[in-house]
Image 1: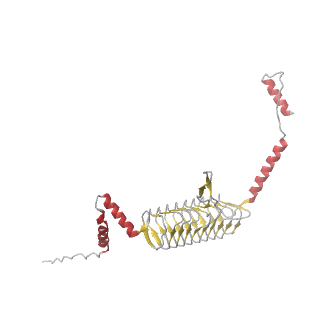
Image 2: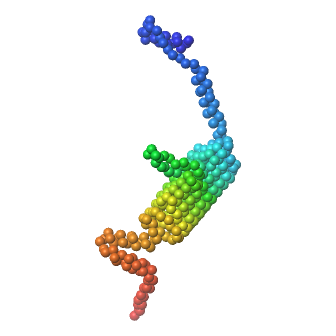
Image 3: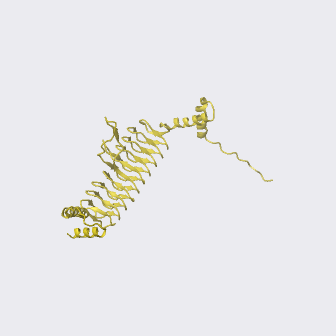
Length: 310
């Protein structure tokens, strides 16, 4: 009734006389009840997260965290995550539901971990993302681009180091796996279903497409690209900017685009250089052989001059 009187006074002040004033109202009880339910749900969810005593970060009450672990201010550990002894989660990092982190593993700032398992004594630098969906799509019968299901996980072995802003996608038909003691530089992209062996060295800006398989003790130079579904044998070394387009089944050094044995690639480089200078390509191999033989030859010792004093 109070609202009706206010509206009537407002109409009178505006010069509306002898005209019916119509106003609509709705019961406030339902709105209050709905708002109350929302507030209660928000309060319940807030109560599920608590402040960790060592570092000031937040954790879900269902997470299993070793008392010696540190969760820095601004970090969040979600439900059913497992944090091992002496682990450290950096500020701004997010540990997603059901993620497992081994003992003595440290993450930098703003690391995002989801759908993954991290081994013991790993170092994960700032901005790394592990366990997000891979890049998989197909065109359906209507000509529309449809996302393929990405439902598996990423598994990181023990003593692995992952550089800043590197991304490792989770698997779709098999888990993405990084072997033990493998070292990964900054800005590396590892697609879904990739399997990388133990003790590998992967330099900056390498791109590994989905479902590739890499053996043990493999070294990838800077900006190497590997196409999808190829296999690389153990103890292979690839020169920087190389591109692997087919399987490599024998250990050794490779380079070029497409990647070939290193000696063959060097001959290709010499040939291209000579062609660019207008020379005949028939002399390329001999010139390369002369260059190689001169490099391998043992230099003669310098001649000594004896001066006698008179």
